[in-house]
Image (tube, rainbow, N blue to C red; front, side, top):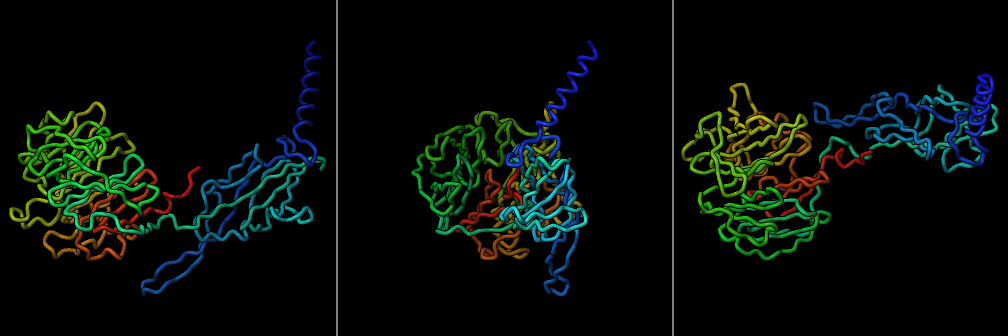
Length: 456
């Protein structure tokens, strides 16, 4: 009985083995004719840079193609690198290691059957166009084809590029502007002559803007506009809190306390009032927040904030702003506060006092704007409060340590056309990783190239 079962098992294995590959005209998954691994060898890459003398220089480096794995889809018969090779990679002559169950030949995908070449680990291959790799079974009676494509980025991943959107948005004459990306649209709120105006454009557009009628928004301080739990909130200049679900119809949310909204996170709204910070979970009842430094270090103007959740689950708000120039003329930088919250722990506000060895504090900019983008914080403003330390729209200041240091960066730079323009400005980030900037009626859209690359 045992012998019969063993014989039957051998027969079944033999049938499965022979049926794994079919006739040469068919594409079928089989144990006798398949590629199990495909690895690129060293790849040369041309690097362009600027030398110490200011002249453009070009040099070539080599890197291992194994850092960019080739994914084999046995069902579709394709082999490709989902993570594209860096820009300017030279793939016209690259060695490749192919592990297979039989003999391998290859040709260009657009060539005929008479163009097959024998594969060898010592012969370089031209991967500038798609190739077809064919595996022959040991007895050459069966084959399987794979289309091999090596992807190379066309743009430098670490370059940030701006595009000016054609047309003119509103806001050129506004006293203050606030920009939001919500509901598939860009919403530009403008404060003009004591009233609020709202202009919208589709996120896929950014060029054509439509004004929507606004009611109940008189005296709104547009710089305080905050989104929380799918609702919009804004403080009036007299401290009364307004709310709206769409930005067009505004009603009073709270008039019991004069507040100036400064931030929001998942737990509530935060506002500046009577020289202290307050939090509300419903927009009506306010509780004073704990500060680890005296309230004298709180900013009283040019508020800007960013709320985000870090990879470790820590919820953080970074709040920046300035103290009154008349009361604190010697302030050399903006005031920076950080609020952190972890599940099960009490929250707190920490003042980031500028240490003596910190040469990169947040600049004391008028009309500060802040955005969280690609795990960094970006700050910009109309210019220095003292009018001397920097010019309007001169630089983007980048913080990679959650608000401790702020440095000018070679990657994140402002459009040159905006330099020196003392105009109201606002920024927003959408779900497609675009950074939107409105300045004096101009609309700009920027993105770090690598954030636009297709993801596997």
